[in-house]
Length: 176
Length: 311
Image 1 (cartoon, chains in turn brown, green):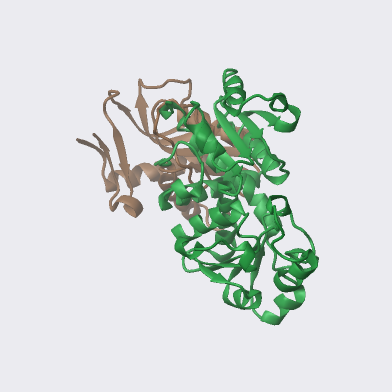
Image 2 (spheres, one colour; image 1 turned 45 degrees about the vertical axis):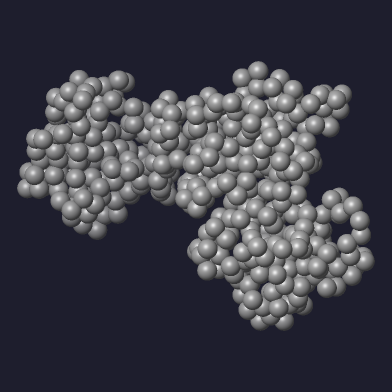
């Protein structure tokens, strides 16, 4: 087991990612945050919190997206059915700059499903991808992140685990 | 997590966890149905046949809509306009349909146990959309969903099933479901329409409508099923309405909050009067709306079981 992030290091990276978002989207008047259920929400929550501190008084539009019904692996693994979680996007994405947030980018298939799902909420002007961990050399579809916390070269057998204070009791990212 | 069953033949075979899983999944589908685009691509590789050997409006439309919202391909089959009228057997009909690569069967039949029989002979998931006087599981699931949505939960709630308990598959499915989920259930109707020994299913029995309404949080009023009553079980519809019809005067006299449900179709002025059916107490149209979400959940959860089916 190798630690990729400890709490202090993670804080620095989240600050940097937030700064990059503000650099590109300024006051967020036309940008929205969409967190990917289930594990991307913790990262999205943190980023939204930091954005609110950076842009006091600004209303940051923030939605949560569940991609269960859009997955491309339905029925490919017998007995392993994905159970949906909540989707809550109570605004239209028409003409918006969407920032999609997930914790780990691996094969890219979840993001592909996410893009499909987004279309059901309108036609965004642009979609960007923010991830904490980008696993190199493991993509199965041509999808790349725009904002990356850290890039890791991990063998297929390895697993990246992102732990969050609010759910797992501590902030840490480990390579198992 | 997944269902413990490969078919939905009845609530009797479900575990409490299965029911919770279906209701949880249904909530997410209800959310899909509120969106501008009310459709998801989930079952685009699945073909479903709706096999209706008995008439239906709500259930058939609801299933078909649920299938379409999930992007499944659907075939509708009504026995009255098919080769069944030429004498084809049930297994032959279904095997012919299945040989055209159909994955799931939604089935309504006037004979009790027809879907159970079929499930032993064909390699497809079967969803019982009502079999004779036995069960109507998706109706009970959507009733439970609607009660949960209205009252916040099922455990400890007092639910009354009123009317033709004897011939109602909705009643039996509701009794199984509600008792599994920890609700208190009372059946109420004329003695001729309440099966003997029904209290062994864990329900209370009452012959006094007013007392029952006084007791319950929810009154699920069932249809008088004249088509299944082969001998007279009460003197007249007018008399039935007088003693067991739910009227506005009766509901007002209770002086309390009460939720009125009905699985439809309503015999207005028999078991339920219009001034109650269309009143603020009634969640009858919510039941219909929730039916689509609940059926989407059932189809989704069973479609994931496709590879486990062997005959």
